[in-house]
Image (cartoon, rainbow, N blue to C red; front, side, top):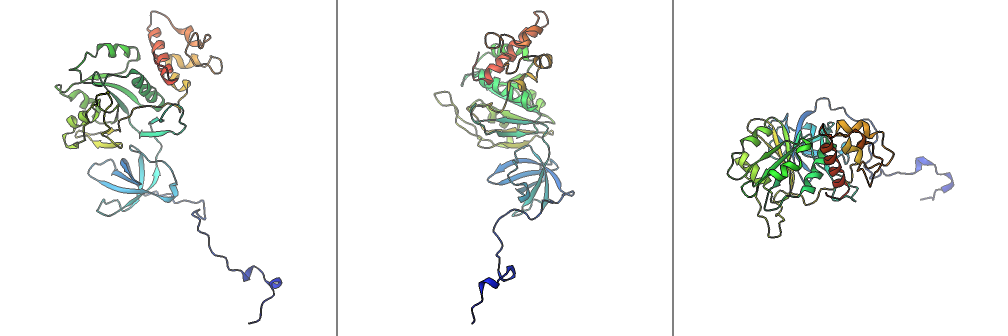
Amino acid sequence: MARRDWRKLDETDVRVRPGKGTRPRSKLRPAHADATTAMVTGVDRGRWTCAVERDPGRVVTAMRARELGRTPVVVGDTVGLVGDVTGRTDTLARIVRVDERASVLRRTADDTDPYERVVVANAERLLIVTALADPQPRTGFIDRCLVACYAGGLEPVLCLTKADLADPAELLARYADLDVPAVVTSTDLDPAEIAELLRGRVSALVGHSGVGKSTLINRILPDAHLATGVVSGVGKGRHTSVAAVALPLPDGGWVVDTPGVRSFGLAHITPDDIVGSFPEFAEVAEECRAGCGHLGPPDDPECALDDVVTSDDGSSGRLASLRRLLLSKAGTEQ
């Protein structure tokens, strides 16, 4: 065969193989107007358990659609599903949309970690579960959970367990100026008050391992059968909840059990985020100099918040509590 002169070749003589990239050829995406609405109730290794129309009797397994890329999908998210939403064995739906979140509980591994971990989305209340003894309460952890609630749009509720082992009065007094609702329980008390708090809402529970989160849920939902831990001799519980899971309540609503945590980083939250949750101080704080941490003397001697405090309206106690939260965010406890 005669050899062709390369100087006479053009682009029609070149065979181009298609690349192996995954980039779509068009930026246009299907609207999925007919997508079925569902709530994410569990996440496990790239698969999401979803309750169709928030009906606990219509549970499907779904995967994240390719067009969503790395869009995070967490427990509590409201999503759009397409494909097989019957929930039959060996079927998969696709998550094609994640709706805007009404609230979000975030944390970081520590105060230097820039990576935010979304614990739960769209929860209305956060029950901060703290044992009054065995293990001893850690107020710094409670303060940090309060900061995360205020910044994320959740209503905090202080849930004190093991009241048969210690008096809750001192701990309750510490948070009285913040007007944080509180409920006290023990192994011999009827959990009806807590059940009423949870009824008809999406609520989340957070706390250290061993404080009684799973035990509490097992009493409210006997069919949940969550593992319960034994507190070790050094006061740290054994982790018994390894992933967040939303459980349906018999009278409506959902409760989200979150894994036990030993640290609650707030690297993603600024002092202004915290002050913004206190209406009586938020507007005044805008008059502070740039970079003011709102801690007052000696750290911030010219903080404008000191000018609005009077001794007869309770604002002094509120400001002291606010500054305690700011110190907790800074990694310092009072």
